[in-house]
Image (cartoon, rainbow, N blue to C red):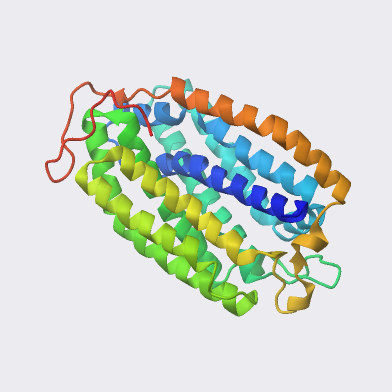
Length: 352
């Protein structure tokens, strides 16, 4: 495998890691106004992601930095063509940061409600825009012969990309609900299990529709064959169906693991469908940016490969340690039953 291909795979892995970790983070935010019974349970939901949400966003920073270093032409075109979209993501992320910090500055119900909804809306907006943006890499955006964006903000919204945005929102909400089933106990855990069950059908159907459409778009607009994109697509759909089964059976750890696989496999489907291009040009396919044409010089790729080989394991070990430290369940002490009468995993069970 040449260095250009290696770094394309690494960037796909970084986006997969970001969607995996920030996905349940956003998912919890999406459920904040609807899932908890009272303010105490809502505070527990905030506490479940409080120690880790900012660390999860490091994956986005690293993905952006890696793209800049390894594929500067890809980075430049994305940040020009998706400028308004990325600005909206930034606003949503800032609003979420403020919600964590300012919600505790007041005790009034209206004050806290404002910041609860701010977190939920920020989570929805960021999830939706990320789905739209990544879908556009495959569906195609107007590029001129120099690889510069030649369209406007409205060109980013098509039937496929909007479905992609909504599918990501549903996947994250489902992922967040299963995360709460392994991080909480008592009544809140039971409510999270019920929410996960209710979301499972919509997430599975929405994800399946988007994944099937992705494979079709890859064939129609990116000159790909059905194989290999169909492999991660089938894996993602199977994982989402299994997640619904595990949630119904009260197997919280397996349910979360299945949604995690579903989210990562969805990202893998997009990047597998995209390769060997990094951005498809529409309507002039000849202007598409490829892995080879967008890559940095070989020496640059060699240097950043050495740096990544040293630093990435350190980051992974540190983040794994963080999740280990904050693995205990939160909420009530009593053990509750999951839907269908099957006991939820014991409160002392560590997170998956």
